[in-house]
Amino acid sequence: MHCVILAGGSGTRFWPLSRQKYPKQLLKIVGDTSMLQMTVDRLKKLKKVSSIYIITRKEIYNTIKNEITGLPSENILVEPVGKNTAPAIGLVATHLALKDPESIMGIFPADHLIVGHHKFEKAINTADHLARKGQNLVTIGIKPGYASTAYGYIQYDENSEEDHLDAYHVKTFAEKPHKKLAERFVESGDFLWNAGMFFWRVSTFLDAIEEKMPDLKESLNNISKLLKNNSSIDELWKGIKPESIDYGLLEKSDKIFVVKSDIKWNDVGSWSALYDVFTPNENGNIIRGKGYVMDGENNLILSENKHTSILGVDNVIVINTQDATLVVGRDKVENVRDLVNYLIENGYQDIIQ
Image (cartoon, rainbow, N blue to C red; front, side, top):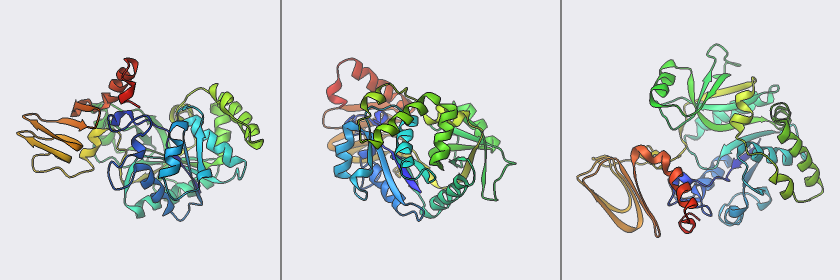
């Protein structure tokens, strides 16, 4: 299996720690190494893995090349411009098709936290088995621990188990739900969290793109010709429409399997996710770096180089960096992206880059 790590994101919901030129996947948020390095190291432990590729954007290519260990620099592929997940995956598939179109490729986010190697490898092996069996598209779904509104969901057909492997036909994909809908999903018992991991034969994927996203496939065919001649794809890439793999392909396909897994997984998608990663004190507060909470509960302080104290407030997140400070209610963390967009549009580029 060729593992492909999607590492072109900007991590705006982790501002002000995450910046355009040094985004979330390069930060040491939950350990002593970056999220991307943790992902590379995790995949290298899998027995079925033959190679690992990273697909990223030009602005952070050199940083990844210099900071990430464990893979050759030629395995770091570059999107001329970010076009969302479908074109990015298509570009890597086009590279792989020139070498071995019948090989299996697995797609992985760069910045998720996964604990439990044995269960993770078992899920990967099952996905690999199903991807080799016919023209299947395969994903991994996580058994939900609670009614999260931060994750997408996958509904599966409980009566369609494949090869007694706890893998099932997918009925539908659901976007991040509101609270009551998330509760109904979990209560129904046939919904899983969408972990953003996908598996398929290279040729199967490209055939599916031709059927469901013909314009993208035409562009990839032309890119293949350029790659054969070692020519630049920059101009051609400009005309490609941005599209997510979920919306462009998976939601339209009827040959998708989901492998159920109970691995300990967290997409670390916003500051509130750290409440599930770190152990709070007796008042529910989490302090990373220099900080203190008086008369307050369920707060998060991240302040590495300065002391930050808060008094008499609950459910507040304070991120204190060298040049910017964020104070946000715990229930508003999903809107940090909107704040970043406002700052960009109003001339605060210096604290975004």
